[in-house]
Length: 240
Length: 196
Image (cartoon, rainbow over all chains, first blue to last red; front, side, top):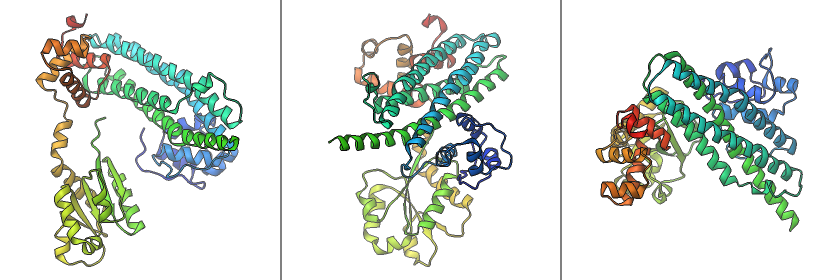
């Protein structure tokens, strides 16, 4: 699931090479609303065919490959909107695919493992799941609309005005630390019975989720929030 | 999971050499924090503690006295990056030497070795073994007692309870009540009955 080399993504890189080096890119393609049949496309050809902004694609793909930009890139409003769409699509993926998959596995645990820890693990996951859904809702209903109204230079409505980048960051930290806790418990502590195969499936899923969630937070914290702060500052200055 | 990250300072004028070193370190699989510094003066002014210093001996030659002061005061492990001739007495001031022609594996092994020898204490601390007192605090914690209640029942100050709790979180990597309960149960620290 993890890429081994830090492959630097450029417009002329072959898409097949990109995906072969780092299979997690497949999920990224889905977030870009693109399919995974790559033909002989280069990165730039693929973006053209799927109508994706090349700059945004390269930025995000490099983040997936572990390369963080050294300075905040200058993105057009359309590009920022594309980035927000990407994030919103990942929410759909978490909510409708990844979390339900893990939830199903966890609910099956008690069939194979009668240890007293299992009901506690289930409870832990349920509480965590609720927390995640709340955060996704917050992003969908407060953070993203806030960004979009800033982009469109609209008056920020009062509900959306509650957005705080500090709160945003804390949510991410909480979600990532609960996830790593769950992984750690299942990997190091909870005794195994007849759940060897299921346990592996859960862990693989958790690693996959963790990887994508981490990139998700990076996009929000390293790129989107600073860009938005710049825009906010500029608009404030113009008003003055 | 448990990540022990080492902080490395690099003082090297060539951008190519610097970038190359960073790439080698990043690919080594060990967590390093790398900072590039301009001079020995800058290193001296840093409040942040570095574990390892990779330095072009040119800078040592220009500022030998200050360099010697720093390695004594900061207890930093020093590695010379060599691609030109330097007098032996300069190179001797460093703990290790790497050459421009060394393989990435060799360079990583030198730095990794330095980390381990020099920071075995940090490695020990990362181990997940709880002290007796921490186990007592954990037992009370999973029963849902507050810091104040735990302090009273163990006859210690609240401040001490908080510091035990910090250590528990640091050692186990688990901070939620539910997670700690699972941890305590799996490690036979508590019995199921005590939480029901």
